[in-house]
Image (tube, rainbow, N blue to C red; front, side):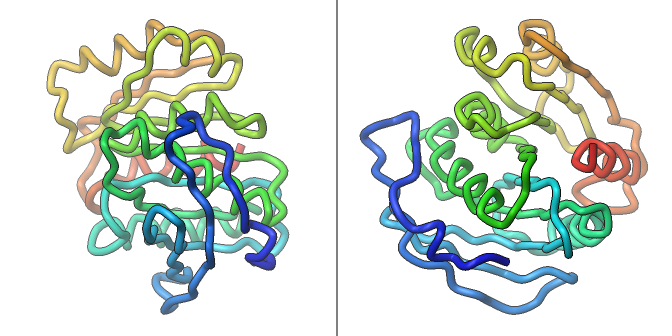
Length: 225
């Protein structure tokens, strides 16, 4: 992992009222083959877990609703260790609770900048549930973002989707979603421009929570493209 001082300073953000400054990065315990980190910012502390590849070519940011623990920890470990062997640095980040899900984009942009400072030439984001909208917005705003995936969530207006293009969009419906009819996922997919893919994995096996084996395989391939 590169020198964290390279990351200090103001982070580009869509909302000028949210001044985000990274103060320091504090290391934590090794977990599931990765390292727990705490990003101390002017707006609070972010919990994260980092999986480092020997020679990274891609940086993958995974936005989840809660600190990585339990089922999330096992999922992060499976993906993080597997992707490290394919030249992908993975950062699992839990955004702070802000006024709205979309405001979490400043935390997502900070995560992308961390991965870029670590040597990744290509950046990708995946947002789960309530974090999906933040992933969409950050991908549209960050010039080095090469693609975005959303799992069981995500909304965006037409202007943001226009700005997101031509970055590829992967929309995934998996077990545990809050949209039984699938209307929201299909509506997002149909309005999106550029390369896009809609995958329904609601019948995936439940060997690992909160994701099935089919979802792990899908996201592994997507992140390592």
